[in-house]
Length: 376
Image (cartoon, rainbow, N blue to C red; front, side, top):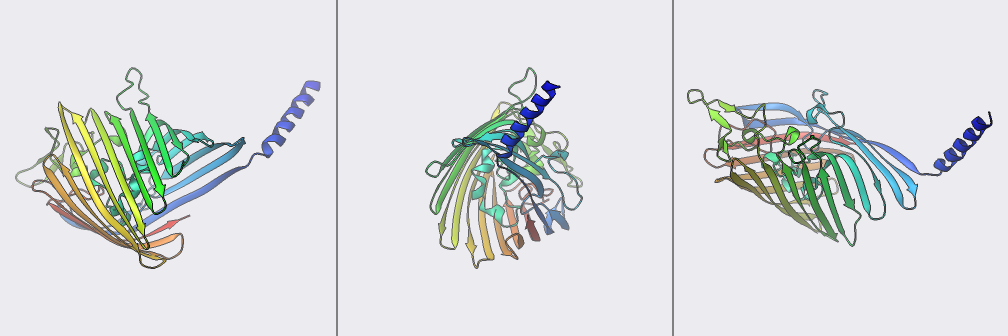
């Protein structure tokens, strides 16, 4: 009996101690929907309802707990979904956008889980074309700037020191006897000083698979890569057979270097970035390079205009892409927008903007969109 009373007393003291710790949990989300016109997708034009374009649809929970002595516990669980169908994104994962837990202090934050790499954290902000409609991410997103995750990862991000933030992470393959294949790592840095901001990353994927697997025709519109045929054309009908539509194109490695910068001149923010993605496999090596420049002009407090241009090269091919957009804030949480994206690819390549639609049957593709985005 005495032991029972003693245990109850200890638990009471512990509960009182924990009551002093400050903790918070927040619910948040983004919902985006609109109508898109596609000039040529698989040989025909289309008007489609599309969602999660300007920003990916999400619902999430995030929280912190003060552990005392400048230490804290953090977590985030973020779900991605399609508004039009209610289905889950990221391969149907419940919290496929982000899922992590960790500890932070005055030096930085260490987290464990399914997390963005530094191609997104430190470089994506300079991909100005994507701020038009959302379709204008770099070709095929092979440089991962649209927001890709590394599963089973350990990640450290420092606090800002005189405007400098650095980070490093490693993603485990979680395969017995195969430590390398399926593993990945990423490092990066960001620097901000007044109106100037710059960032960069180096990310390496070893034999990427799963959601990181490649489909060269769907992503790039090419029919060969690393000396391998990735799509064939029926000479009688012109129909394209994507050989990697159901199974990823295997490569030994995918290495990404990206860097970008921006400067604010009053109401005008100018941005530029460069990415270099190298694929190795089948005894060969090929590099896709993206050069981008553009800006955002704040016309009035609620109204802004976006313009961006990208030039891409890969295996003797090249692409020109232009993105234009206009945004109007109906409130601090609700944005109405209209945008236009246009691409022209070199001879023999089927144009595909971002990785959102089936490639065009020609060298050009145009997307026009009106949409509404709400955040909470």
